[in-house]
Length: 312
Image: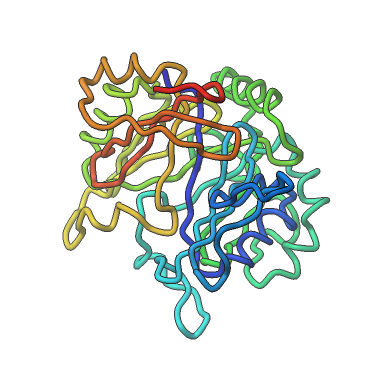
């Protein structure tokens, strides 16, 4: 039922610089401002301004969207003096995410200048290959911290192990079908939760996601779930002393959504009795959707794309 990531929403204070990083520097296409309306010439114009402090930018990421929502009170990982917030104080269910690319060498050739001149570029010398057992799949990474001091990666799957080739090939084939240039989708979300059992029940029992990895050590335990092209890497710390559920709710990433090919079937399966939302996620992209608590108070939206003009 779940086919891919529909969108990931970030609430940002420095809207203009964030939009510039993702569009001009990374080469992704801005689809629109979602608060636009047509003028007398049929051109879409924005109904808000920078003074309103509530702009949105919808950026295409393969079959998905990255939504930047301007919010001057948004959570930030930048201290007032401009320094980075220590990672132990960072909040949010999604601690970092990564875009998918077929070739990080090719990606680096396009964004080398950005990574070397931007204040928080990390991989200035080129792609860094992860150790073999660092995560479920070995990847090469390009990395920087965006204007929120939020970790952003670009991943190429490099894992040579025979048992990993099925998933590696699945991701490659899905990405090849997606629109885009260097970046053709979301590769993985790295997530944290408070109650791993409840989160597993949500993603596996309710939504039907496949488990492709289970890991555990003395400090943490977690799973990797398949959501189309994207892998959801979710873990929890075993020692929850002084840890509250609020740490694993909204952060810089405020929400995300999944595409489904049959929302009615899912609604019936889980016995959902709430409101079904009807809206345009972007101009010309009408959807119907529901919102669900994933377990710790972090809400996930499930969306089905509709034909233009159709009704729920």
